[in-house]
Image (cartoon, rainbow, N blue to C red; front, top):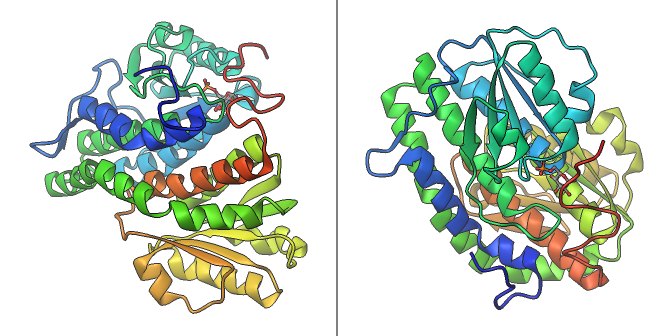
Length: 368
Ligand code: G6P
């Protein structure tokens, strides 16, 4: 990895485009692409035996962990306790010493995450670190290190490290499912086959969605508030979309579970606040579409991020529809990361902000 922008205007743009390659690299560490199986991971954490898992992180890494929770619970039937590290460290959580804890951190130096790790260690849990910096404090103090192998990330707003964290968590959850007997060999192969296809799909999405995103970003750059909605693993994605947008464009944005719309944010709906709906044609699609209907009925403008099946299935009028290929649920969070990253990026470019060094933010937060 060269530390220059290459042909890109910003490191963030370069890092967005590096994702297919970075993910291939990360996955090859965890997955046997020929056998379509997950490689055995560090023996220090025995996913077959642990009664539960605690996941802790900050910022974008926390949102990767939240997607991971859905995966560990669904594929490995492993209950997951997750919180942001600044809360986790002080909650005096009664933890089971037979459990394991995972700490997700790009830098491996985030103060709150490290403090949470030490709390879990004192309670006797096995510690795993999902980190980019293998020589970091969090990696050093862990029993097992799961590197995300994303290479250096210069842009303050995480992009490739988020999707590499997701890819590693997906592989770990599949491996845990196999170890716990909740995933059969055929299911494992099928899931790994989808992971293996992901870099190619990402590259083709990056090649095709840019013009539509740029056009949309021009409109978004005139807005004051944006709401993101999603269900299932698209819920953490909605929060990540909102986080990316506010970090670099300074537009106020919120990410909500689509089902919570009626419990508050629906009061804000008007023609001035676009609602970005992240809805692949999955198990949750019909439910999310009914939330979209509630938005449309109140004059809200919808930006619909979906797949070919979803676009064909919904007849609701939208401000814009971004159509992605139909993909399996396990890779949807990584694929849907691309439009939300690009939307934030191009909106910030239109607004003329300092994309790689947004005001008041630091790449690594080593103080409390
Ligand atoms: C800062 C960065 C975020 C990052 C978070 C956690 O807020 O700006 O991009 O997600 O810290 O950092 P870590 O290094 O622990 O992943």
